[in-house]
Image (cartoon, rainbow, N blue to C red; front, side, top):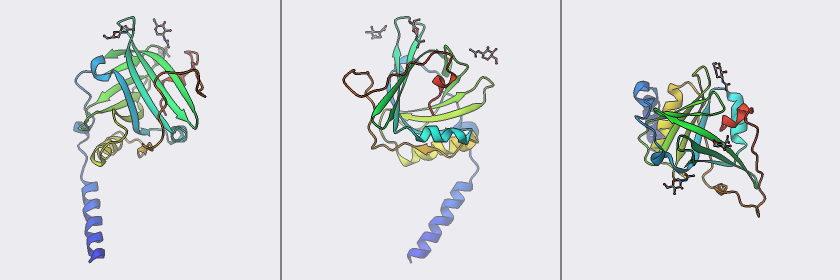
Length: 202
Ligand SMILES: *[C@@H]1O[C@H](CO)[C@@H](O)[C@H](O)[C@H]1NC(C)=O
Ligand SMILES: *[C@@H]1O[C@H](CO)[C@@H](O)[C@H](O)[C@H]1NC(C)=O
Ligand SMILES: *[C@@H]1O[C@H](CO)[C@@H](O)[C@H](O)[C@H]1NC(C)=O
């Protein structure tokens, strides 16, 4: 009985998997991106890359968060990437400009597009290089965890973009604090703006 059920399930899975993906719908950019929507902390849930060589670096991080904050200069938004490695934290700050369905970095030729998603409390972001080729693709959430259907949707999006199978972060790993406190064992890296890798999250 169990075997029959398992085979039926397998068949159903392969059928549902081979259904053509509605990529046009899956890759729709957000109508508009604004600070009130982005402001605050987002936790990295999963990521995908176009070059499999970048997965190694992605997997070396225990957890990652990004934060968006307003700036004294109202035309700019402060964007911080915070990575946890073992017992240290790495902070990287950039200035970005919100534009249309995404944002651009002040110092790098990286364009980020926020895509529509049916996941509640999520943000899906595609990072393109200067030739507009997608190089990195991330699922962020306000929460530590998303539902299975949300991961499935993200996976379908990675397939549409012909990027790697998503690498899922471990939701039990500790997150770094958003603010740097001097009494903790933390690594503060504020690399020179010529370092192109600052714009990378993986
Ligand atoms: C950001 O916005 C908040 C609330 O509107 C304000 O209190 C704060 O001073 C602003 N920060 C900067 C750096 O402009
Ligand atoms: C962001 O812009 C502010 C004001 O123009 C500047 O003081 C700051 O150094 C910039 N930050 C980075 C990381 O470039
Ligand atoms: C960004 O790319 C354009 C076109 O490829 C190039 O002309 C420009 O110098 C680049 N800017 C930076 C900051 O790398």
